[in-house]
Image (cartoon, rainbow, N blue to C red):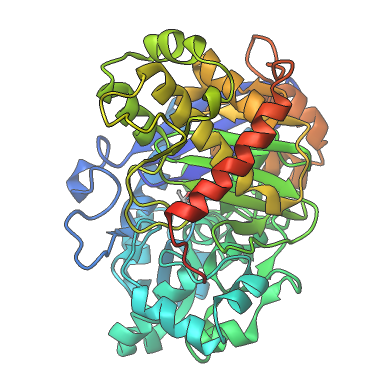
Length: 528
Ligand code: XUL
């Protein structure tokens, strides 16, 4: 019974899912949490607390130890690791690991009688790794953008304007702060390619999915962009792994994992990718036409794209789609925090939010609009903000507005914002796949269907990044068809697909225009 293993090295844990793709089943899931399982690192949320000047770093040795512990747990759970035919994985995006020149040769011959962590330690040229939550690189972003003649050009080439958490600006900051450390660095890996290198026993390539989150990859050529490299740190190409298609088999699993954890020497390691690209696959959204909206602390919208368009406003990102082509990722910071602010402010629970709010008001809210930005926002880019109400009776002040209409206004405002700021994708969605906590609320899901004018299907998938990684391993190394994998693992939850209500199309078309005008009247949006 050949199995595949998908790993997810995320901010707070490293987790695994084992699939039997012939049976279409999930055989086992396991996880190691940095907070509870590796408390001795003192990084309960997966990063070193108290970073200054926007620095958010993690200890890469913690990731290594978690990987090893996870393998031990998988073995202890009765899974025969010699039955694993292929492994792939997912990593939190943008984080970087700085290794010396001898890492490449050392990783080939790690000693199975010693732990992995102590054998990596001498090769780390930077003891901590900046991760995606780091915002310390404002100066470096400005320097790179200026050297490139502006962010429009950076976005055109790399799919994103220069972003603080992206790896290029982070590398530049390290080279400025610690030139000696930088000069001794032989290779910079992403979290994804670092973990894959440990498993493959060699320094492997970065894939297009995660590589596009560095502000260094030229999307059109599929190679590192020489001008971006030069603007970041001269000579950078010599310290980066090559970049390759996500479906590349990097090689067989290393001797270390064969001898220590019982893997078969024939087990293949497929390049790892970023967590968002892997989630696209795990949610069944890897073929164009499906748009995935995840309603979480912040909301995200992602979709496969046939061609590398970029966001003219510079808010969204374009990454490689691990199944070929490209994908977008648009992040809306004011997600459930804004919904909860309204709910709590009105003293409602989620059921009342739906019954006394949505159900008591008409689609379009009689023209009452909200710009639902309760704090800083990425899409559109707003440094700080508070909600703006447009089209309400003139005398209404805070606390006097009809609570039911406020509930509807926050949701319609959020989904109009998503619709307006995803138009650049050029994707006409056939179905919206909705996931995340708030998607369970029927009224919220119906409002998404109505605002977009597209049927909404709710996904039952959990752990989509690890699942997507396992599906990628099965597809790339074992030749299993993507459609077959999606049919087995990415089915919508029980329950009907929600169709848009009849007659609401025109209402929302009109409301969208008013909403866009209100946005531009209320904020001076920065040009990048
Ligand atoms: C994406 C991003 C986050 C991390 C989380 O740009 O920064 O979604 O990938 O792991």
